[in-house]
Amino acid sequence: MVIDLKFSCNIRKASRHDKIKDTIDYKKIAKTTIQYVGNSRFQLVETLADRLAALLLRQFHLHDLSLSVHKPGAIRGSQTVGVSLQRAAAPLEGHWVVFSLGSNIHPASHLAYALNEIDKKYGLVKISHVYETSPVNLKKQPAFWNMVAAVETNDAPAKIKKWLTGLEKKSGRVRKGNPNGPRTLDVDLILWNESLVTNPKFSIPHPDIAQKAFVLFPLTEIFPSQKHPKLNLSYLEMAARFNDSNQKIRMLPIESLPAFPLDGWVE
Image (cartoon, rainbow, N blue to C red):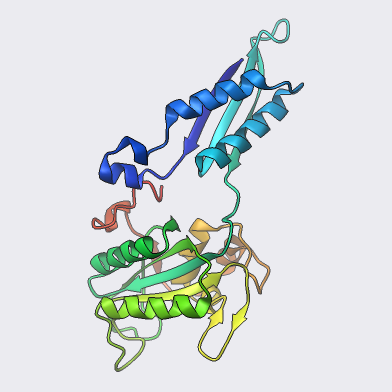
């Protein structure tokens, strides 16, 4: 039996610290695969491939994988017989939370600062590319840099919002004058699980998901098939229907945040 395995994983921590303990243990994956296949008694290679993919995704926290299982010479006159499949990790477990980040005052440094602080507080799970977007309400100001980030936490929305306000203050944001004017950092809580939350101070899902390109398109990048809790449309469907030509948006190169390398997070 011949097995070909390709997988994606987050290499950011390993590339930063250059330590074996921070990367995927390829040798252990190989040993686990050989042991599992050797002990299996499945009649179909389809079953073996599916079960093996699920095991590897779960045990080694892989983002996704491509797996081929072949049995050379299994059928007379055929070089090989087998099956190939692709699998992605299951949706986030527990309370997954998504933040929308934006800045148009030294945006590279302020977004990198925010990501590092969020990572220390909650542990980043997914982040999007950085997008350059046109100002929406107050036109005469520099373009914004925007992105989204997902974490897992059991903290209540109000507690998260309070922490985000403190993060914005630490970045030097001063809430005076026009609220739509230039800012060092703007971080909004846009999703909290698939829950609907409404109180006098904020709503979840955030209304900007359906109204603002700078929120919707980065969100679509990391959760294309996830459905909006209220509209029951996937974010990919919502992005396809978005038709406000006044809102300009373009993806920036992966090197946009030198103080927070995006390698290993985005492709």
